[in-house]
Length: 139
Image 1 (cartoon, rainbow, N blue to C red):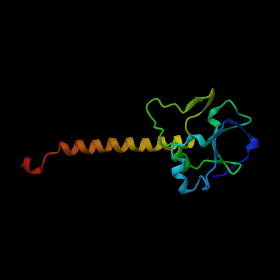
Image 2 (image 1 turned 135 degrees about the horizontal axis):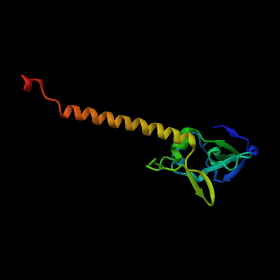
Image 3 (image 1 turned 135 degrees about the vertical axis):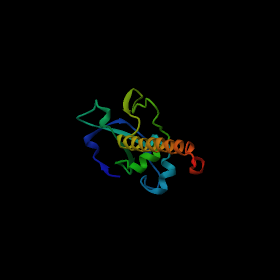
Image 4 (image 1 turned 180 degrees about the vertical axis):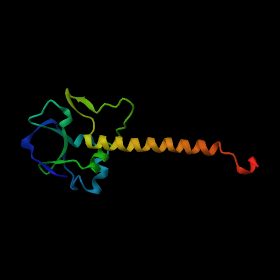
């Protein structure tokens, strides 16, 4: 987590304040972050309000805004699945924001692509072994 200078950003969508004793980046906070999008605040650079691709997800902890680490993002947005036709832009209370952080979207796409390659490789190997003929049957 890195501190964010709030004067350079406008608040697009305000989340709840992190009021737990444990820092949100600690491993013990995983169960508190799980599927909890309500703690995420979306910030937009003051010079680029219209482009939602520049929005930054942060968390308000001890009076300061902090960026989300990849581990925190994975925990918060674990329930989001990349289905066919997935659109990462959403409207919340009339405000356009990203559905999940761009870094996490890239990571999910990379993981999904790796899974699809393995799946097709597995099917090919399986079909080869299913149709192989023992050498003893040829002689």
